[in-house]
Image 1 (cartoon, rainbow, N blue to C red):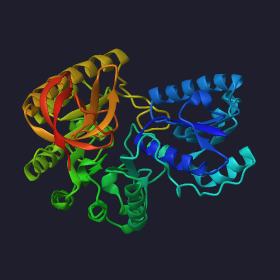
Image 2: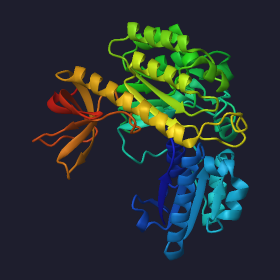
Image 3: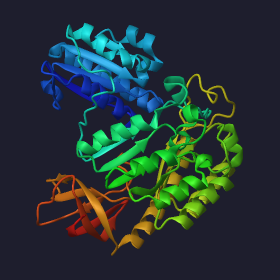
Image 4: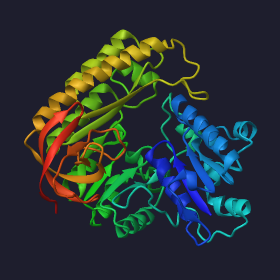
Length: 434
């Protein structure tokens, strides 16, 4: 039986998808990338904000329509199912099996009943990489103990549940044996890692152990500002494989609104953290995420954020307009911001960020970086690559390279930057990377 997968949402969801794919690794099943050839399809959904929920609904309906013509089994899992399980059962009778996140350990039994087949693997014990074998995400915890007023993740995933260091290192070694060269450490809040089971922040201790494995790059994503302790920064600066890449979602740059958001820390704390990073590391990358249009946001507050962005000059900045999610603290707040105002402010913020990126890109011309070749685009006769400055999640800029010689996907090359186009860079190969 040919089984296909659709993984929506974030990198943490992708890890779940790869663990589920591992369950189907036996002689009875065959993984099939072409959905048109599949006998069964698993959809892993996101339920974080309105746009993600709409994508989940549209995808389920699209595949359900396809099922009427050919598909034998349709399974839907993930955050959307966890959040709206009873509604899913009522609204999507075409789906053969819905599985909540909390029931993932029962997947071998649930799928066994559906397919009348005995699954030999436990969930999470036979993860299979599907996109490529040179870059992978390593999830170190699930859930979140923060209670940001806008966020539904704790409602969906529960409190933080850290994995033990020895289990994480064991998985990292397995990924290295599969050929992974770039390891991306993820959690809802990576800097909180370990506090729930060790009684203190343990990210620095984990990184010391991961750095012993011979990855080319180790990247950390989703760092909460007030948990980025000096000891963590000093440890990172001494490690060989950990990149000077800091993904710090600050969400806003006005203290009053941060309090409404139930975010810890202050704008001054964020400013000092970034200052410390730039003093300690050579050419660090600072990435952030902003929410525009949170309740109580005024034009003056928004201007504070614009001024902060202009001051800090983030290397990469993503933003989204506030999505009013039921059962969150922000859902019933007064002074909701009109959608037109949200969109107008979002446009101003991103226009400013584009100018900052162009200014930063000018400074990169003539510099040489190790880059990872990700794919070849025959239509444009060019390769797409990333340096340490860009994560693999499609948010950061990429480097376009034209080469008369064939380049190997998944390999590193020394590349000189010769120009830029909008957010992205242009490069030429100087030599094979080490």
